[in-house]
Length: 471
Image: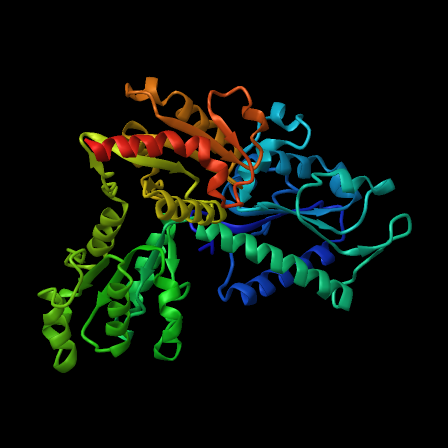
């Protein structure tokens, strides 16, 4: 099971078989072990154990491995440059994000779709340089680590040397951060660490949730206990649900996790093994009785149905994946006195900056500012474009295709949704240049939170608010 939800493998390594096999094998082993130590879990790495590259059976298993890997790592060398199979592997990975025509456009802006935050999913290991330093022109925007010294006369770093270990640490640190970012883009589900009798059931639940592309926290089923209770809020934070699997054994730490979930406002989903009710006694019996009556639990608590673990898991996935109702904007006299601040909720940097802008606008202007939802973006996006009087499109690091689609939505909202004209619309972007011909106000420097710069955009909304208040 991969560390990154939704993938079979965490890393696919592309290398030339003309290179020294022993060096590559040692590198792979070192990377696997060091990533495991860095992330605290065993990672899944695609390996050509059948040597199907040599048999040239490329279209089958290799293609599947590339498509289902979170990160694509190239071991660059002169022989890598001339290998047609390495070229095929690299092209297949890149074609998931860019067409061949787009790849010819300078720095390939379509590669932004290959990012997790600011990091690219393709990583370069420079084992040996190309003649005249030409390897530096090979996908120059991508992160890399160099395992050699010198240029015309160069020396490769041998496994076991301090130079090799130093670069391995650099590569491991970068790849671990990439995998963490990719994992964090998935919806988070907190699966409470259970009493010992429910550990096997929780393992199956976690496996199914990972296959459904959820970010399951904590990473290990027994990662948390009473000695690490201070870490529990960090694992619960931003989860869309918290699942508790209860059996006959009593563990006070389970109750502690449930209290923390309630305190942090995360929806609890609770399943009690039907057989456990017959075996439970003492403190656990009292706990199960209280849970069955929903005593002291949030109103959002749901008791999962199912007479066995398979039915429970199915019920949990149905509840989690069901689209949540988007909160209705505040209406005044039939109109929405509000501002829709569009950002990419899957980009942590953009979401955090948008939250700062929302807070400043609400505090200083008294306007209702609405952000998109991460897990039902399309529904809430349409609702707010239909009902809000102002729209501010925000982008710092979101993918370019996402930006273009939402820019089009803003400019055509009246026609798309058969609504009255928006009172105000603007783009707050890191680079507004490509949108100079769009019929909106253009603003730059999205990370500089200064309302004076928004005055032309806010003024019509402020006037509308005063008109509503006067009616």
